Image (tube, rainbow, N blue to C red; front, side, top):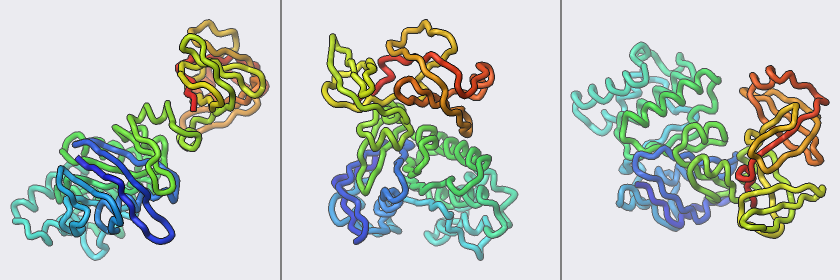
Length: 348
């Protein structure tokens, strides 16, 4: 559907370098990366705001690299919404259709469809300055969707909203994706939003896409230490790997050993996501090939989880639900048994 081949964009102080990306028809694809990675510039180059110095942008088998922005079947929704303050909500939504001189019948049908889908009926008479952030975002989405784009580009669409508004917009975006045939390319710096929203994910760093894949694959099997750190792997240990009958035995720098299902030998980084680790106050009888004992040295509360930092000869982070934390009655200084499967250990 969208094919980007060897794309370069030079903006002087920053450039996109050799971007290759494929987005499937009707896919919800998320570009994940830190601030300054070039995520917005990539979207703006696809939209035609910045010229491509080299490479091709192909949309539905048609090259659009040199096509003016207004003639590309692409719409972009920015983080700050960019609504017209002197127009009402209804006038904002109708604006692009009227500029393109669609018939009143087509305009009415399209506006009505997305007003209903995004629950905007009671806002049509209001001006954007009187709307909440979540309301402005929904209007901006409707204004883009009525143009029936082949590709919808979303630039950090919910980062400025409060948590309840974020939840509502995420649900509405998924509903829009289900009920329309629009392909969505969204950028974000949030790991949680990437894995919740994306059918597939691409990780971006310093103007380059460094890994793409299914959301679960990228998060469980990062290609580099940078990606592992950025996606929140937390547990990354250096060691030396030796293979024995298809199993990697990793000797850690502290003298301990971790077992992994891997074909990698030599100097490695062993990555274990904190939610993959089981804990118990008594010895664990499980299929996990990696077991150890340690002491809780720190407890920190996150939005929906509790993180335990455990000294087991190496400091290892474990994430559990708040209910599990309450049920287990855990405290700093408690001794715990840890267990995790060999398949949970990814070697870089």
